[in-house]
Image 1 (spheres, rainbow, N blue to C red):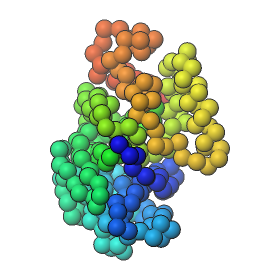
Image 2: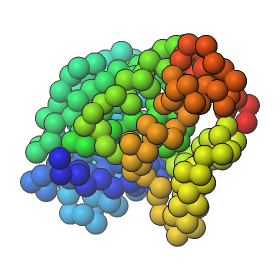
Image 3: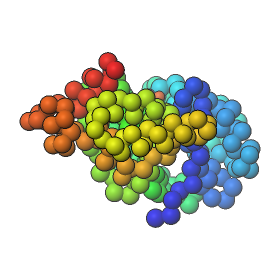
Image 4: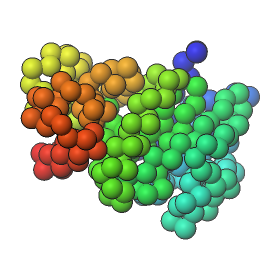
Length: 253
Ligand code: ZN
Ligand code: FE
């Protein structure tokens, strides 16, 4: 699959709005926390915004949606379950829905846990995960249960065509600190931290992240892995119990 060209546009303190061309001079954006940075990207690229995709209702992901809709006429797409707390939707979507975005197709997945109505989008080789899955981390469980969040992450790690992760925040460095604290013996985590620090020092985003790397190294995606369970002294627990343990430790870290 040819990689989808995507641009992480920094918004607010550490959010990314993910922008991509959809063909014919048009573009889509995922989770515009603010309108102005996205407007600047559109002007620079000479593209017209057609579609605004929202993963969940938190203001740092939706703050720019209405302004962009008003200035560009772009359609707003979000979860039907969250219609009451999202900006006015042109398309209310749910699990399994498919959207046409110019040359591309987007697939909708329900991934509750961070919020009850959280959705993710798969476009080409990219997974737009919002605050469900981060590079070397995952979102806090605000609304769903720990078991529900684990089930969502279990689904995300199994999407075969998702090769690159585009998530809502630049949290990689802090997530790697915690991952290294859990598994101090894993050299790959040190390599990843060195790379991440270098990128941040140059002002570069650490994203998109490789999904293969996340499947191999992100502790939150490995709750059923005997090696990780052994390092943590959690042998014999169910994956969702292991997830609850790791999530609890991260919340207190
Ligand atoms: Zn959020
Ligand atoms: Fe967020």
